[in-house]
Amino acid sequence: MTLDERLVQTVPSPRQIAHQQTEFYSFIHFTINTFTDKEWGEGTEDPAIFNPYKLDAEQWVKAIKSAGMKGLILTCKHHDGFCLWPSKYTEHSVKSSPYKDGKGDIVKEVSDACRKYGLKFGVYLSPWDRNCKIYGQGKEYDDFFIGQLTELLTNYGELFSVWFDGACGEGPSGRKQYYDWPRYYAKIRELQPNACISVCGPDVRWCGNEAGQTRHAEWSVVPKRTRDTEKIAEASQQSDNDEFRQRKIKATDADLGSREILKDETELIWYPAEVDTSIRPGWFWHEYENDKVRSLEELINIYYNSVGGNATLLLNVPPTNEGLIHDNDVKRLKEIGDYIENAFKTNITERSELTVDSYENGYSIENVLEDNYDNYYIAKKGCSTATIIAKWDTPVNIGNIVLKENILCSQRIETFAIDALKDGEFTEIFSGTVIGYKRIVPLKNIETDCIRIRITDARTEPTLSFIGIYETVK
Ligand code: FUL
Image (tube, rainbow, N blue to C red; front, side, top):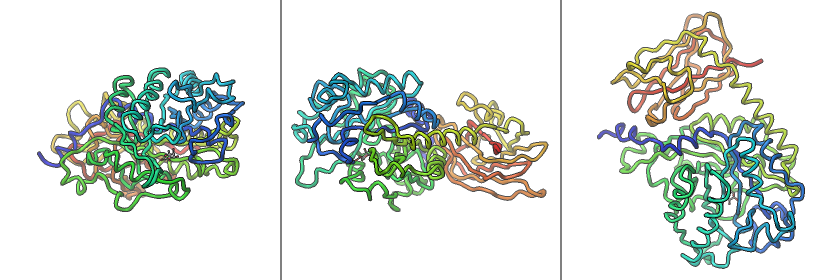
């Protein structure tokens, strides 16, 4: 079998497809650290300090929805071991805090608010637990961890993500727990078969940094060894420092999936990237960061490079110690939502005369007008390139072009380019590598009456499930 044949045989699972379609969703970092101004708690904090007396999960969910996000992942337990739900396996939880006189369950409040407003819900459960006395004792700790995991998997409805962090700062003389990952995964598959297991897990790949940086080309078919949990943990945060959060991708990891990289790999997997970053410098809320909410421009740029670059975006928004999302973050989230709504409001592909140089019977180019995988375009057998032309009667102003492959047929396109007709001649205005699930090409208001999209190389006959050409909204 040729390399290209092997590559295109590697396809996503239904749960991976559903996850990728979630596109943009939020992280909520909230725990006892919110009250101590720390990023990593020690595990010795007194639960008496935990009292987010104004907590309003619906306020969180509304703010997140206003940004156009479709899901929420809550840090049910961070490294300090404090549980936001009344776990029966520890006293280090909300039940020992003044919050609602020890009768609160924040996981319940947040998951209920998500259902009410139509957001998917996911859980973050830190494998590293600094409070737990038996951490490092092998099976005994795994039993405890499975107990807590089971509570989260059974009591809060359907989950779309279970997020396992690789971070651990125990150091060389610290306790070392060899996590029984296969056992954790089996429990999740048994109780939440539709949930993706992310980062230290088989379904969603950590992009490799926390700064919001993406690779030039983010491939979904990568070597199986990229899923090795030990390696993921090694690359994860090892100590509580700001520098790590700003760290970019190492040059050696810049390419995970080109033909050159994959040619000698024996085992390949579908393992799409997720970009996780915070709206502020820290993952947790700190009063002194209230005026450090990242700019709209920076966040939109991250959105284009992640959601528009064949990855998903997990944007953290940390609630305050009162239990509310701060006004500055609320405002920025709404700005993001408005920006995205405007940028992708008016799709003028349908108004164009659309032609292509080749297609397979039953897979004609009109199939790209609707955004689904039931109908899609595929080039004629034997063709690894395609030239698509969209022509309008009068000039149009284009702000963005969205291209999507049908990933049920794997990720096939290697390179593409876009040209605009100006004074009777085509000029190249963009060239790129991957398309994958979704590629957004920002065009800064190009005026033309004809656009040409050239798929210049593909692993086998290229597919496109959707083309959206968006007019600039004034
Ligand atoms: C890291 C953790 O150490 C941070 O505190 C945060 O939770 C981030 C998402 O993952 O590895």
